[in-house]
Length: 204
Image (tube, rainbow, N blue to C red):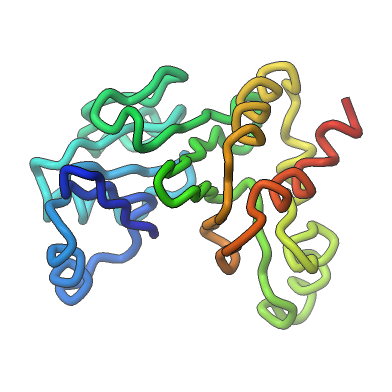
């Protein structure tokens, strides 16, 4: 989960995690929760809890989630165009063409931070045990630096659809990278992302 404070003081909650009273209290010291962002069709488990806690917050649906979670209220859908509520502060790109999930990648301009969910990952060695450790290593999930897991590489069956959003992502002046499955990258983020996606250019 990540919390982004807009210049207005309103908060954007990306990939909301398990809700607790302590967490809500801490978040509310930062500002008012106005937007809830599930970033793909896989990260949505706790979204309903946050929606009940903050019923006035606008919930954006990434591609595929509205159909999957008919029990939730979605106020808007992500598209390739900018979001008026935070235009000039947060950019986004939708990584089309992947059969596992369609991920919405965010970029916070002021901090120079790109925010990924599942498309790049870096678990520490020892995180997995037994046969899972072997699978994770073969899937590039425990590499020395962030990588796109092999299963996601293979799932990009429409490379043409993915090429333009990836070009936009790699053009962002990224300094830092936050990912749901790995430690944050605190410098040279753009170079890190270019290495993580070099396979895409090599296999075109």
